[in-house]
Amino acid sequence: MKKLGIIVTILLMSMILLVGCGKSKADELSTMREVSWEGTELTVTVGTNQSSGCKWNVSFEDDSIIDYSVNRVFHLVVNKEGKSIGYSDIGFEGKKKGTTTITLTTPCDWDGNGNGYKYVVTVTVNEDGTIQSAEGKDI
Image (cartoon, rainbow, N blue to C red; front, top):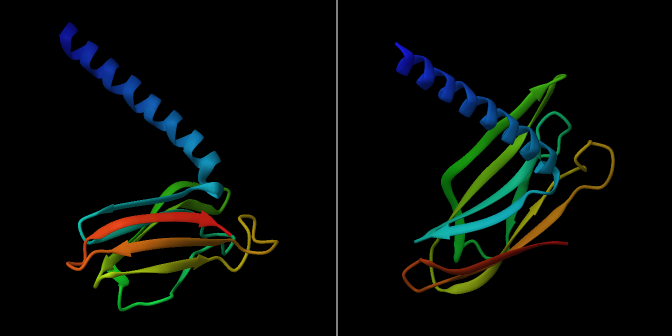
C-alpha cells in the first residue's frame, strides 16, 4: 500500500511540473519561430494567438519545389479569459530540386492591435524531394 502511495505522489508531482512548464512556454509563444525537417517533410512552428487574429497565412515563391503537406495542427497551450493561444505546426513537403522561400505572415500583432509579423523560410530541396536545409528569419 505504501508503494502505491509513493507512485501516486510521484505522478502528481510530475503533473504539477508539467503544468508549470506550460506556463513558461505560454510566455514565449509570441516570439516562437522554429524550423525542423525530416525526409521530405518540413515543419514550421509558430506562436499563434487565435483570439486576437494573430494567425499565420502562407505564400510560396515556387510551389513546384515545396508545397503544403497534410500536416497542420494548432496546439492549444492556454485558454483563459477567453483567449486561445498556442502554437501552430505547419507542414510542407519537398517536391523537386531547388531553393525557394516560404513566406508566413499574420494580419496583426500578437495582441491584435498593430502590424502583423513576417517570417521567411528559405528551403533547399534535393532531387528526391528530401529537405537538404531550411532556415527561417523574421523580416
